[in-house]
Image (cartoon, helix red, strand yellow):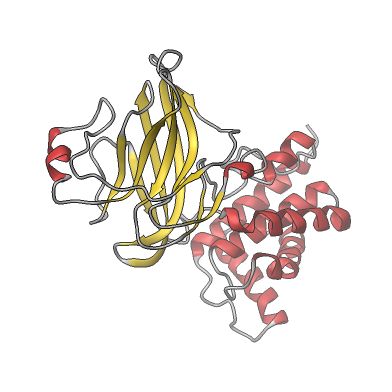
Length: 304
């Protein structure tokens, strides 16, 4: 399968119009979806725009009435592990993975207007005809039961797509041809958003200067957990760096053996910096993630 990562010049086209009668694209489209288009609108869809007789550009279209803060046509990660980065690895290659999105930020679009399409790639009728092609797309938008979520779209089609390709219906249901369209709003499921990329990289550079590469990665990974779970307060990403440093130091010193002991460490750090009980509602799931990070960091320091 070809998972597509694009290094294309960004392009935007305005005034896309959803057509209820358009034929569904993709070999997996089903007849009931075709009928459903008469009464449904697609909140987001892909549309192909012909370049020449052989090649089409693929546009992601915002068919809502709201401006999208960003559109990321690649896979987002919840933590450095999902990006295949490792604690204790000080190589340049690993450090690049720790930043999460270094290879993809040029393809991020900001402030995508209603009815505007943004180019996310292209397909060639001859070269791509036999390939199973995959796209990941993430956008921030509301969900059926939440005012804010990140929608994760996974598209797989042989030979790419042609014409109009719905990603999500206006009742938040999934078109049957989609591999998946997931509404991520639980803290445990939310990825690190692209809009904090620069802030996060700046923090990593600062931590490396103060603590060295290995410890900096450990502290950054802890801060990722604090940020995703809103531990203590909903601060900007970089404003919990001091707490992340203290938690890292105390985990190494106190050698916790379970999530309950980790929670005691987190609470003690926040009690010191803020008011007592400030982090008393820290979820055990966050503490489990912190425990796993601590264990991986310790293991990475042991001689082979």
